[in-house]
Image 1 (cartoon, rainbow, N blue to C red):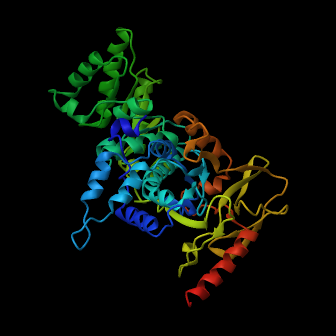
Image 2 (image 1 turned 120 degrees about the vertical axis):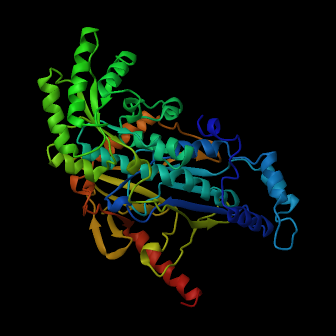
Length: 491
């Protein structure tokens, strides 16, 4: 619906070459039909915060449904050469790719779910050749939207109920950066965007004022304001800081009075520079005394959650916030750091899974084995903890979780709490088996999810660490596998 409307019909080559060289090696060695389980997750909360908001699943679903290699893809791969100048891939392997159709099972957290480190946002099981090929595109489609949705949720939290508008297209990293960021920001709680293409593609409300260049085109500011009011009487928000901000507010009031005589009203003003706390307070006074208490004050100017929170503490009289660069570029966190790790294998679908573990010098980077699910416990309307467990070994009646990064930290979860399984079936044997919630539904889910958590988890500085960990039995089996793997590797 959206990916293939903006990009070319086939996106099968949206991958790293090493995924294809591994796929070829699996096929060449006869391992291509072996089943594998992969999990997509991140290791640290972004922005030094206490949570993340899952996003990007809708695009991933569209990609998965249309995952096929077309003739142009195969012709390109046939032209690739190895170090000896010969073809990198055998023709028979390319024929195998030509026949390949989606066949994996996928379970996923719905967009808008609040998620924590080490929790799988996505689980892929199926023939290893295809499950491996999905790694790069799924990470590409999930990582950035999750990062931006999280940033937006933080900005919206700082705004304390005021509408936040995404204004970042001009500073976004390319066309896709602008589109993806606008969608994810709306999911994370923004009320609208300035990005008209995102409005058309995703149905996001679009909002606009005008730029300084409009004012500068006229001999003076009153003439510019009057001309804009004449042209846009039903969308008249005037940018007042081109020359003298407070005089600009007085000029806006004068134009607003003439608007009223024509049956319209001054919608508001925008502040884009200077001391926003002081200027907004003074602007509010001028607007109120001028007879425009309903006129909104919109602020922009390199805003983020920290600056908005500071302006709130200073008593700024700002009604809406236009947040651009620092939102769409995820200022302070260039990447989510999501990974896609193999956790179990089996010879075929009727055989039991064999867990696999990746060792690391750093405990936090040692992978979690088995086919995993995440269960959220909610007691008295508040999220009490999340358990990552092995689907083949359901949790005990007295649930206890262990911190993946520090095994000395353990927590008993309330056994009588309400629970939710966060990974839900999405594809079975390559066919979608569940509807994908709309963007508005995902946005509502994000809001409801955030309301489940203690305010301390949503702090911008030194947030409380939400208890999310491994089920005690899974933790023990992981330790045993780590010891076995270390012995095999001679460690």
